[in-house]
Image 1 (cartoon, each protein chain N blue to C red):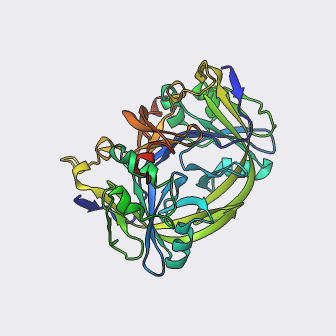
Image 2: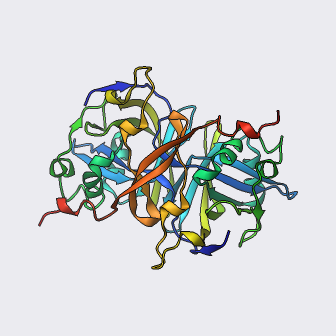
Image 3: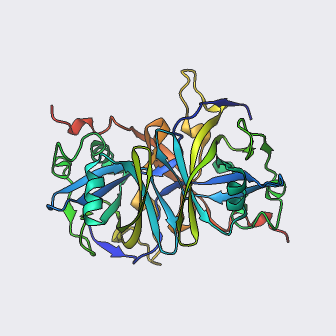
Length: 192
Length: 192
């Protein structure tokens, strides 16, 4: 396959489009757009978020030790993108975007009621990378829209309808079709 | 929105389905399936990979200081999934899956020729999380399938056709439609 080289730059591959909700020590709530989010451990269940250290959200997370990752659906693309355009120091983003924050089960950072999937986290680690900070969040609770559950209690990802972010291309996409189940699709290649 | 609680567990949201290629000090090459991959910094361009410390790939990366992240397309879903079912200690996964490794531009870990997007990395940091290791890779070079470039030199993500992995659901999906451009879709909500 013939290829072209792009040089050293940030790449693109499917990542989640999320809003991180947080609260300051004084009780001021904020939302920050974040796609540099990944699961990093199963035991304990942990995810990572990388963000610039100048962000209000970073100060809030250090102050309270909590944050919530809210996975944004396709129909809220404008609201999600808006939260990446302005700072929480300049505007009450939730109010302007018509989004709603609720108390979390474990306290601290609120939940975004409008997101079909919320992941409550407790700050459990940190690493500096230039002007960025990679934060680890131990997952305390996951909230999923009840409408996404089928009769057999399975979750239908199409009902969640998460935005897929391709960072290097600066594009939001939707999910397409279910291609295959993981840990099964490759069994045909196992020795018989 | 009514929600159900899943308790503390690994969540699901769009992540890339990749194969990490690496090489041991003795020259033995390996491929490992990895979806816990994320961009973490723009300057320097850096990504993270989280993997279990017992993995052959982890030993290889420590030994050589290099690895390559190969983004897998929909048509190679069986081959990609297979590489997550067996250890490189048990089988020559590339040969069995009919995949092809090539020398990388910067040496060390090879490139997967069959993947439409390869990201050559130099190990630049590490953090332990229980039995997992979060590795940082400074991005040295990105290779993109020439066929994915349009007449205006833009990259068509549909031509890359990356698998989207929803970990907590153990499902591979395809991309759907382009929903909106990032850093533009939310401008309607800015003050006039």
